[in-house]
Image (tube, rainbow, N blue to C red; front, side, top):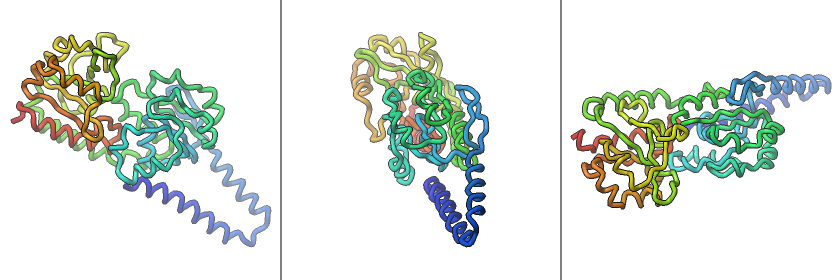
Length: 340
């Protein structure tokens, strides 16, 4: 993958330029050296105003030491941004190629995956950031100590409301990090694959209704997590022309809700196809495994008809990793009885 190469290239250019400059000015006066240093400092201190969810933020035009969290982590690694530290993004370790994983693992981590309440503020300060990009879900913004973060560097908050927001936010993350020119390398491939699958299944599956069950959610005992459109797994079906009807009973839940297992027939009994994600190794979470082993699950019309789609790479949130998901979705849809 060229992401790591880009980062190395940037470092090589900087080192090479510094070496050439050292040779060229060996005989120069101290005043000339001071002038050169002053020009470099001036260039690095240029700023611009960025429109974020937390307001109009003055940020470096070309940030050199970025701390990124949440959905911002992987797209910025892929785009070769100048990262100094990141929050964990272990949910996509199984989606990363070797070079991307090596780049991710080499970066200092300042928070566990999915838990900004344990953000290491001292670790962020130690990273000496000139920009902090928070891509954590909008619902957890209140868990951040923004005063502490702002004391370390300008803070850009761009948090998703629903998992499907990764498509729009990725471009914004790249813009803030000044790597728009190297972001979205796989977007054309992703769009083409989406259009291909939409055309492939339109006639045979377009009239069916789909419902999702969350694998990564941790519902309370006796319940399961029902996904509607644009949720963790179902958002990866966006653009395929398939129907995911319904909304949570509580509008505050937006895209996923906990439902009593006893009411699974009322909730999923009328959909034609059920989809759910798998862990990176192909296994299910204990909660989902318990659900699919239950007699109530086995009695669902979609399950009895064999209309179940298991989705690998179901937590993908970049164009590159979502291509892996589309391959898995294609495999699952092709096996549905309605497609035979």
